[in-house]
Amino acid sequence: MSSWEQREVYLIEVAQRCLRGHQSFELCRSHLVAASQISKGTIYNHFTTEADLVVAVACAQYQGWLRAAESEQQRYTDPFECYLFHHCLRLYDVLAQKRFVIERLMPNQELLQQASEEYRDRFNGLLAQYCKWNQNIISAVGERPGFDRYELLKNYIRGTMINSDDGLKRCDDVQTYYQFSYAMAQLMGHSDRRIPSKQTFSLWLQQIEQQHTNAAA
Image (tube, rainbow, N blue to C red; front, side):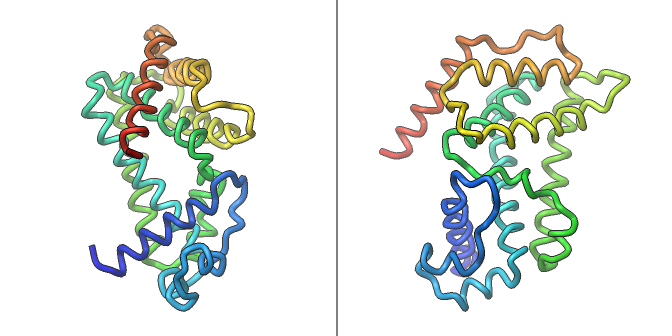
């Protein structure tokens, strides 16, 4: 990774930290100067428009989801469990990290048109990959005629993520993930499938917390 790419990654990480706990994207390129200790000119070279900054943050989020999806496919041989735990991990991340929910803004064609071609193409490529992964997993679980299960689930998950940062939900609440999984199973058309038990989710949360503890050590 070149120094330019490393600096871009760093600036996006700073932007993500600045957005924690916020429900709107009020961050501007100029705000990154003090937060990153990098000159305004350099920041503006990386993000030539305000839209570039938004799209860059969105790209980083989608890249993270794709990495997590690859890891979970190696861990869970059952596509049903893989899908549920993947989106539960996304929800955990929002709640635990107080992460800005990028679905509030993206995808957004008007915003993408304001972004530079480089960021626009990057985002569209990542979006296509992530959509394809979700569609493939849903198909692997088993198709159900009559409804577009992918669209139903996508809209429900988006709504759940947006509504999750209202300050009332806790990242360590087993019931939150149990109910989330139950709803996803219903929308997937697989109400006959047994979702992970509350005990399973409790162990899952313990494992996540232990991983975070080890990473911080």
